[in-house]
Image (tube, rainbow, N blue to C red):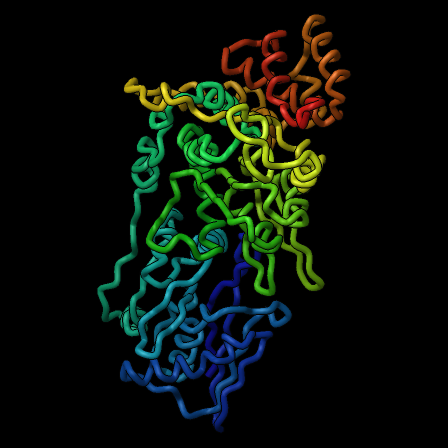
Length: 511
């Protein structure tokens, strides 16, 4: 008897429907074809034990399982439940015709319980697109998949529940989630608040500008000056995610297997990889391609603490994703593209000893050591960072102040207003939502300078020996400063402030 059951394979952040054909006939043997990997080949042992321990039979016949399309490599253990249901239907232990209306996925334990899978949201989106009635997935993944409307999503905890559902005996109900309610639950309660930061008003201003325009920023200062503390609070002043951004972000984290029991991600991600991270862990890839840290930070913040401690080749692989806002991983047999539109926040000490430029600390590093330390960060990478700012230690008087600083919620209101101005400005353009994403053509259109501003910028370019890319960065940042002031045109004081935020371009910064 021949039976067709449907599963799903995830490539990049998109799913592809897989048809699992199971045929039983006289004879003995178990043959699995259609480019399965080792985990799928081992599934027969898990399926046999799971069925036996739940009072069902693994038929003593010749079983042929084909996974179509046969030229597409299938990976992982998530097809256990799909194959098990196919075997039960082919051996007439399930007689329902409804099986073909559902996508069925899940990894089986030997006792028949289900383990969570990756990419449940992508699988549910594809199932809806292709007109399936519903999906059956492990109960741990049900929250993220139930985000998809007009699709029956069933959370399964044991293989028996699936069999009883198709036999019409069980009381399995689809999971319903109010996405609007889920989305609004955690919006206004930031874990880290700028109200906790004493002093550092100039740096907070920089952070506000960076958040308002989506600009990359690097903080340079001695140990203990508050660089990490400030960086951790940046997501709290970013505008709330839109539903589209939340779905995009959840989909990436779902593919990476990081959304168990979470549902829709309402908070912007904050990723902080250690400086020992490899280039593959940062940009993604591997033998079983997975999104890297820059994709997990999509629509959020990627924080690289102690930037010069990262291997140079690791930092260099970020140059293209920073420009294109997506990363393409090419292999001999496939090409996968992951979105990676993130804000880069980096921090570094000004010297190996950490206290260069601090008048109250002894100079423990020679100019040669400092030059070697700073040369770990390439010029092209620094050019892609819009704002460079020096962070100085907080004086004792500021630390002991009892006055509460401005809260993240108040700063976020100003940032959100500036972002709304940008959204209206770029509404005709696809994939451009804020100033940092402007191309050179758009900069010429929206960053028109008057004569005074132009002369000021020309003088700064000549004296600081800035590159053409740095010129673009200054214009983008000045456009954001103007938006924060609700100014239609860029004024000379906007340009002057933007030029200040290019510390590492200034000649004699080392001297």
